[in-house]
Length: 255
Image (cartoon, rainbow, N blue to C red):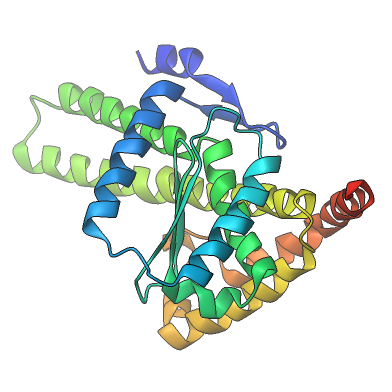
């Protein structure tokens, strides 16, 4: 059964060419995103800062114009929250928290974030995460059936070991992989939209300092959902020649 799931759900991420598991259809994923975003707009406070909202809209539309997600229903909303975060739900629904703006500082910094978030949607990381969870559940059911006649304590230990093993050995590494992939794609998108990709390194340096002040540097790398800040910066430097070439091409094509 698990093998059939793998064979039936193989797909390829645009640009990077990475093979991924997708057991959720694009239509199902988009509907989940649309419903979730409508609920968030009811639960979270939408910012009344018209100037900041206009900047989010401007930068977001510029990135969306070069992102290969043709059927997206783009919407960009600035939410009033001290949290330094942003997100893009399937279907093109993007949220930015006001707490992030002091770190982004300008349009190029914001383009770094929105490029990253939109890249998650393009690469369909949401569908991949859901697919991994379905696979993990299927594996758990197989394990439960295979040890159903074992001692209760042995069953409990095996279940706990399976849960921790799959979380640390598979789910978290894939989460970090998704973040790195979104960094890579987002760097290309911001460059194609006409934003200097070198601003991405400056942003992540500022974000690393923010994390240090918040105490976020204390968690071991293998327990994180995101790569270490210094790892992200090093990877961005490796991808920078490709991004700069895209940036120069974008400037050459500008009217």
